[in-house]
Amino acid sequence: MYYFILKHISLKNQNITRMNKYLKMHNLKSFFFLFKIHHWVKNFSIFLPVFAANSLNFFYFNQYIIHFVIFSIASSIVYFFNNIYDYEKDLQNKKLNYSFNIYKKKNYYIYGLIFLSYFNSKISSIIICYIGLSILYNLFLKKIKYIDILTIASFHLIRIYYGSVVFEIEITNYFFIFCLSVFLMIGSNKRLYEIDHDFVNRPYNQIDNKILKFLQLIFGLVSIITFLLYILDTSNNIVFQNIYLSILNLFLLIFIIINFLYIQKNKVQDVVIFIYSNKLNLVLVLLFFSIFSFNL
Image (cartoon, rainbow, N blue to C red; front, side, top):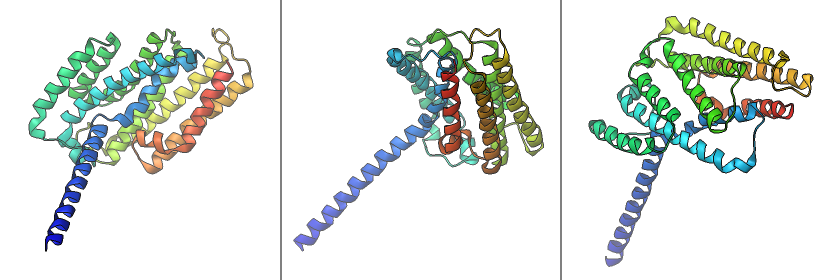
């Protein structure tokens, strides 16, 4: 009898230990998705000016890490506020990997503001503008057709501008227009995904489907034409070593855009999932940047 009691207590303690481990893992998973740590991949765009100017210098590697982390923390604060604000709607739109008590929403805002007030003293005005625009987007701009897509593209442009400032690299008009058109294409595709999944807190419906598909094609075409004009413009400060490598880069860009549009048309998945899951896209992008840098 004494043996069975000890065994029962032992099993109970094991169950408690397992439950505690589960709760810790659940809390860690909720934190990861609530702050969208997996979206930090978007913040690599702060390095686009570095690659475009062929200014990568591993002597400044620690600075690259520091600025990447700074912007990633800022973006996570934005995602944190957005996820709290849209929590009830997001429960209807998609399966969430995080949860919190909606009756404590005000407390979460206060915690975020306290953290934000500390963070603002440490960062540049560009980061503050990024956070300010995100608040406007979340409260107002998200509800306005097509303005919301332009705002999404602006978030990426701010990342690029941040990289150009902290790494002291001048952005050309070609580079700006190219990046803007690519991000507008991605933003249009994001809204197509949300229409297909019947998101309830967006200004779009099935009627807008054809317009958005047309827009993403136009923006993709504009990015290709812009890159073509860039490599053909002899007045550029940057001179390419081999015109054939530049043409190869152009074809790689075309393949990247076709792959993105084709895969997204068939799978209709979130853009971040596409970035992580599409190996062909990863190979094409790495080849594009490698050849581009080698050709400068």
